Image (cartoon, rainbow, N blue to C red; front, side, top):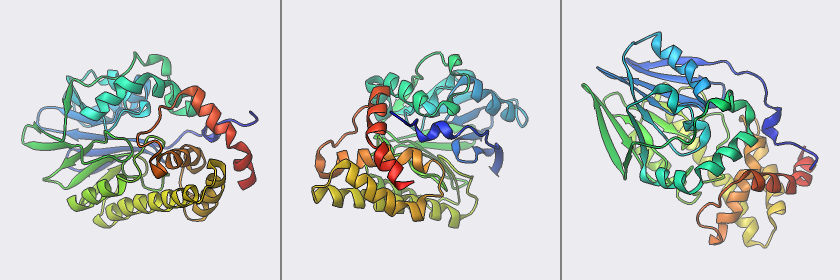
Length: 323
């Protein structure tokens, strides 16, 4: 066990941007770290993804308070991953929304995911001791829910499986603004360790059909033109197709996980290696691709701190050969 997770080397503090997309719509982004969306209605505020800890959420709240004193009544969980939702308690929201599948995943694997994510990427969990426990939704929906914040309509939608089985997007139909969660990334490597690679492209097609004019991806800068929105969605889809296609072909040819990793890493690096967290994500991504290809594990296996270590170190010889 000679090498730590690639993310442990990522210790540089990121520059935060607070970008206005339209009247009352903002994006909190930080150079490829997890994004947060802010929606200001007539009488209240909605936060889409909360940051990883209450301590980190305080910076979001500070920026909200610079532009409005309306109460933060609503929190949306785009999915169950700890880095997205464990800061929720800081907002003291009345309502926390999640898809039914996200709720099921919290029940099934929420605690294991929390421990796994903190071990993988400690910088993203500043003040982890401030986390009071798992974040539980107060309102669970199956496919679509409309929330009216006065005259502002907000659609909270589960359009299909992708990054997880419970992915939720937030859509502003009057403004054509989309908060996609990790279904879409921009200049950042998609993490697919809990993904459904065969379903994800179909879900992305549904996002394209919305024809967003502005988009806040899970990671990466806020996108403010239709062309950028399409580029981000199609770029995410291209990455998934290139990666899953390579692993599926390798497994069908009888190659081992390590062999598929070596081939796929080499194939992807020239095109995507400059995307943030590339080296961090690829071992988890390709392991899930290998599990899913051929139907061996149609649903993602639970990542635990122990499984993370076992997988990571089993691939280190391959990783080092690629460096």
